[in-house]
Length: 474
Ligand SMILES: NC(=[NH2+])NCCC[C@H](N)C(=O)O
Image (cartoon, rainbow, N blue to C red; front, side):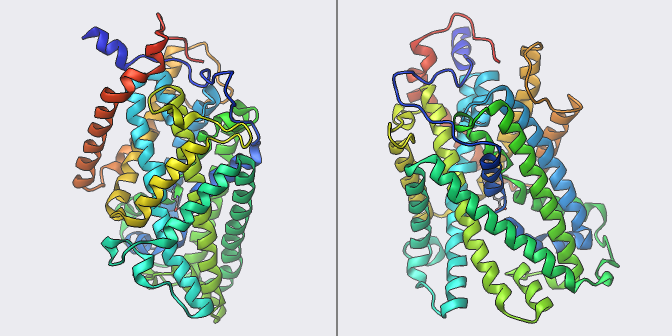
């Protein structure tokens, strides 16, 4: 029994395992590209659609909901920043769990990340076809037939646009990380520009009266809406999947996480203030293209609808790209540790990308996006993400306890308040998830456990080269 425990919790320093004979990933991303990666993953469809759900719950005080959600996400972001600086590997929270908790918990976190990245990438790609159709209709008056633009569960045959989007991202990722990062940065600039445009144009419709009945649903309304809004802040952690491809990662990764947090928070809160100022509260409920409708009212023109639909297309493209990137790098990390097959860490000498692993990941995500009942899986991405967040906050505490003298270039302020509040914040959002989601999540973890005992335990790198002592964690 104690030997099984020894196996399950065996651990080592990640990032040390890249073999020297094989081609490795290259370090080409600096602070700017890494920040673009973080913003690319975070600013998605959430900010474009969240008001119709959140404003009816909180009223104009939704502004405070945005602040609260930012604080919860920010606490987590700080924990990620510390771990990214201490353990600059590519596997995000998987790698942090591997170094602090051991192999089996790390595999379970890997399963959570598969929900946060792979599955949520598919869910995001599904949303893309709707925006594509909206833009096609606005611009040319045509739509892709229902049968070819929605999955069987939604009354179609196959969701071709979703598959095409995943295919484009896959091809881009295969070409090289520098090319992908450049394309992503361009798309991020476009989506940021459109949100800034919303703020500048929207503020001209300012009406102080919209703030009069400020918090009709009180504190409960404000916190309830914060839970809904939290989704919009997910993605700050994507920076931590780039450890092996960042220049000077211990410094640039925490910096990029904090820059992402700052930019996204400032932008979201400004968008919220302007949206409330420009439109009376009652109008938000049930409003489909919320931000577009606000600008159309303010300008009395129809162009904002088209611009925002195009922005959503670009925005989702970059989310899908970054999320798919993250998934391939998480698999890369797991593969170098021997927990998933070696094909995921085979790097092509010319492109310096894990080509085969990227194609396998892309194909699986494409199938999910094109055919499967994604709405159900999408609910599970939230819990997978939140559990991964909790593990990172725990990892901060455990790492400091295990290696009190080991410096991390970035340390969370107010330790241990920040990681503890981060855990409480995540639990507080989990508590509102539906019970069925929790049950499905546990089933998913059991599946991962079965995989561990049939594959990982026998192929683990730590089995092949058993360490007498667990190596010290940096
Ligand atoms: N890693 C992820 N799960 N990214 C998707 C995050 C969604 C993004 N925050 C949005 O507002 O649309």
